[in-house]
Image 1 (tube, rainbow, N blue to C red):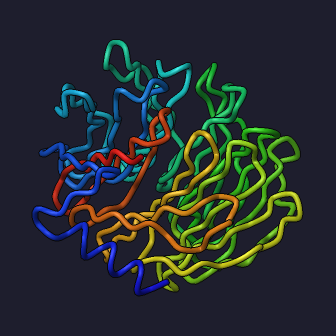
Image 2: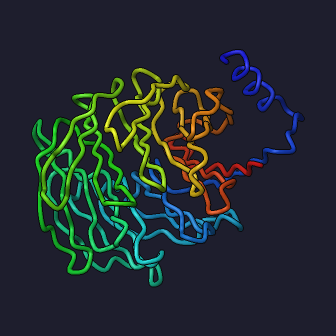
Image 3: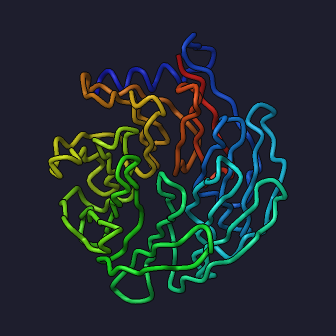
Length: 318
């Protein structure tokens, strides 16, 4: 498998070598040290948090150009799109707030104070609850539950050390929180406001994604250079797969057929089938410092944030 991955990576990097199935383009000057992104429901627009400038950057993917830069707060990280693409919730780490951005007027409508150091946001499938992981200012982190209608924190649940990422089941709104300090995923029932299960994963987990049917989770482990696949019904690890160096961001295509992993130090994206019928990843090179990835509604447009080159890479797959 490693020989196949190496060969494909080398071929894609050779000048003049083209694959009919792969096209790559770039959007430059996407803020400073961009970190995370989300796509509009139609896949035409990317929203990227610019950590260095405290802005939410709006990118026209067809025109491959930045169209707006919205000030949101100090050190923005994770974000989520809600209200059928009309609203963005942005976690501003140093400000200790969740900025609520109107994506029609490009203005911040509200700042929800959560204190600590919020770093990731996800909105439940019904749209009236948002969930925020918070590093906190001590060893113990938190999970905040926010009412998106009145824009207030309704509950705070104690988490483990360094809760860094989360995913919400699109089926039953179960919340899965990555606790990087203990190498675990905590399963949270938001109605009971309780942690129900703890699942051990790899070393230094950073990213998490869930399938559209809610049956599988994918957790990237940056120190062990692998991905843990979890069966959410059994709440057990199915398999752990090696990928590139320092995997970080992960996402699942909207048709639920493939998942994509950003390998930060390898400067690549790995694509694997969700059903695990093949364990041989397709590898696509990107630019220096890739950290996050999303897939458009066509299931073939892959957008990658490159933190070190302050850019986006857009891949068009078969």
